[in-house]
Length: 122
Image 1 (cartoon, helix red, strand yellow):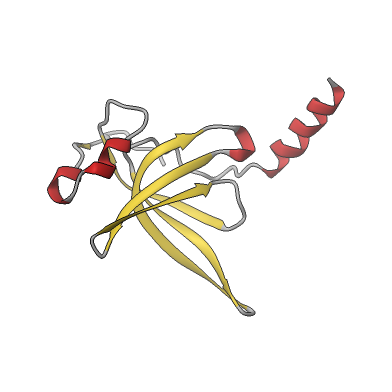
Image 2 (cartoon, helix red, strand yellow):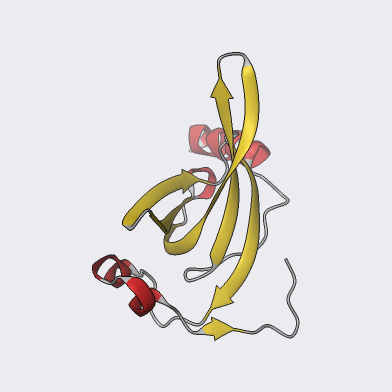
């Protein structure tokens, strides 16, 4: 019992505090730290969140985008040091927790109904 409390204390110190509240269906721009040799840069990755796995320090989001006509998905651990920032571009109104059905759709069929927040707090 004491060991699990110790692990929770260590993990809670490593959680990021300045993340916006994002949901499945949101279009986000994630800044990912790329290391090339001895140089570092932040590369943006923009796409729609199709899945979210909430597990404390191990929380991940699956971001999908279309690149040169091919669907590309990336699973990003949001509390990782390689994920520098997360910006919400737009929100969508969805009725499912996982949007895996977007994998079978192409073109305009992948559009989601936009949700306009009057009290948007990021």
